[in-house]
Image (cartoon, rainbow, N blue to C red):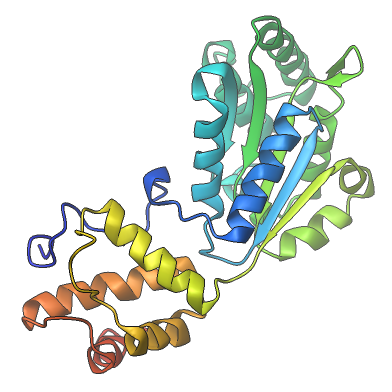
Length: 276
């Protein structure tokens, strides 16, 4: 809609986990390095905690790309809250080996599934594949049995090495939920934390996304320093909120034939679209 007006090839501020748009701030780069280390060094379990909209899912996709999707077998579970404990285990099996699923959904007994999972992990490892289980939004899990089941799958080892890496991604309340399962908490060998971006990183984040979307580097900045301050104030440095605001600003600026995003335009967008 507004792409041509702003000299873009695509919309730069979509809230979708496209790894091309990953901006590696210092803390994101550090988290990516630590999570990759947890996988390659067979540490068993890692945890990434960050506020809503700070880029955890995007980082998970970037991790899989960096590791090489062709050399890993992974289960990426994005809505664990809707799954009871046996169904969570079934989702893990489905991700690591879809053809190994029970024919009937009623065949959800934990013990047979654990046996099946062990076979899958051994077979994948024999084929030279890393087994990775990523649970996104882990903080939404309410059933303590699910956390116990996650602990159980870390028991799968061969020659004193873990047969899989379990990565738990979630909002800050995840920390307390994991701590409530002491055996699981003790298995978390790598802990990473993401905080909101500072003003300098918000500036670089916006520039990065505009560049990926095709905005010529020679073009005049759309967002000046005063506009940036308004964006930082509204977004509190949370990338998802930056995306939402900037997308609406570009759309409104196009409709008004604005030459750039003035602070007044940003304020009016926040008010008109009832952003809070």
